[in-house]
Length: 423
Ligand code: HEM
Image 1 (cartoon, rainbow, N blue to C red):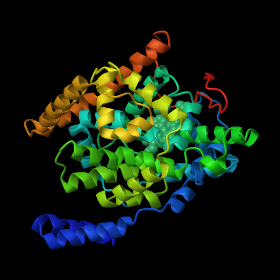
Image 2 (tube, helix red, strand yellow):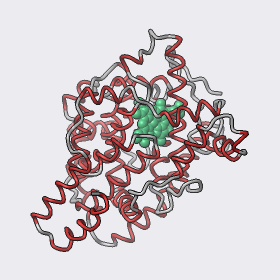
Image 3 (cartoon, rainbow, N blue to C red):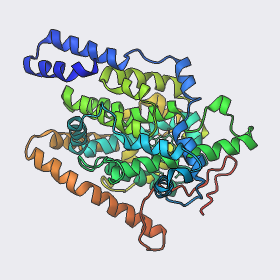
C-alpha cells in the first residue's frame, strides 16, 4: 500500500477526479487506521513508556545538569566491549535511522506551512494547545512536580524553551539531520529529558505510592499523554487554522501532519500510533478520542492554566496583555472547558480587539503578495530571533551571564513539595 501512494497522489493531483479523491481518502484512512481508539486501548497506552530511552538513561547514570546527548555520544563512542550495556547503542541506532516513510519534500512543505502561518500557530499553541492540554488532570500533575507551570516565572521559561524547541525543529530542510542538526539534537535532548523526569518520578512513586499511583495515573509521560500532546501540535493546529478560516490545501495538511509524525518518532512515540495521524480524518479521530478520555481538570490544571496566561502577558511576538490572551483562550476552548479551569469571563473589548487582530493577521498571512519572500524571511530570522529572546531571559535569570537553552535535566521533580531543587 505504502509504495503505491506517491503514484496515487500523482493521479489525484493531475486529474482532480472526485471518485479518485474518494479512493485516495479511503486508501489513506485504511493506512492510518481511521477508527478512533477505544478508552480501553488508551488506558493501555497510559501503562506504556518509552522503553528504549528508559533503558538508555538507566545505563548512562546521568547526574542532574549533565548534557544528556554528549553523555550518550561519549558512551557509544567507546569500544563496544567496554560498553556495559547495549541500550545506549540501540537508542542511538533508532534515533539516527531515518525511517523509509520519511519524505524530505513533505518535510520541507510541512516546515513551510509553519513559517507561513507562524503568528497564528503561535496563538493556537499558547492560547489553545497548552491550556487545553492542562485540562488533562492526570498529565498536568506531572508538570507541577517539575515546578514548571506552578509559578508564573516557571511558566514563562517553559514557554520560551518550548518555542526554542519548535523553532529548532522547523529550522529548514537540514534541521533534522541526525547527529549534527540543531533540531535533531533538541528533539533527542527533550526525549532524554522526559525520560529522566519519568524515571525520577517512578523512583519517588515507589517510595511514596500514596503520592503517585502508577495504577491510577499511568506511567509518567506515557504514550497516551505524548500522543495527545503531538495531536495538539499537529492536527490541533490544522483544525484551529481552519476554524480561523485559513484555507489549507490537502497537500499542505498532509505535509504538516507528516512532519509531526517524524517528530513523534524522534520523541519516542510508538509509530504504530503516530502513523494514525497522517490523515486529517485519522488524526481527528485519535485527537477526539484522547480528549474525551483525558479531559478531567485537577487542581494543578487550574494553577497551570492561570500561570500560563499570566506568563504570556506582554511577551513577544504579540505583546498582548493577559486579558487579550484570556479572550482568545475562552473563545477557542469554549465556555464549558474554560469554566472547568476557572478562567474568568473575558471582557468585551478584549474580545473585539483579539477578533480584529486575528482577522487582520489572517488576511495578511493568507495574501499571496511576496509570499515566498515572507516565508523565507520568517525562516531566516525566526530561529535566531527565538535564540536571542531565550538568551535575554536566561541572562536575566543568571545575573546577566550568557546562557543557552539546552534542555538539560536540572529541576528534580518532587512529588510532595513544589520547591525547585536547582543543582
Ligand atoms: C509531543 C509531545 C511533547 C513535546 C513536543 C514536548 C516538548 C517539551 C519540551 C520542548 C520540553 C523542554 C522545554 C521545557 O522545559 O519546556 C519539555 C519538557 C518537559 N515536558 Fe514535554 N513535551 C511533550 C510531551 C510531554 C508530556 C505528555 C508530558 C507530561 C505529561 C511532558 C512533560 C514535560 C516535563 C515535566 C518537562 C520538563 C522537564 C524539566 O525540565 O524538568 N511533556 N517538553
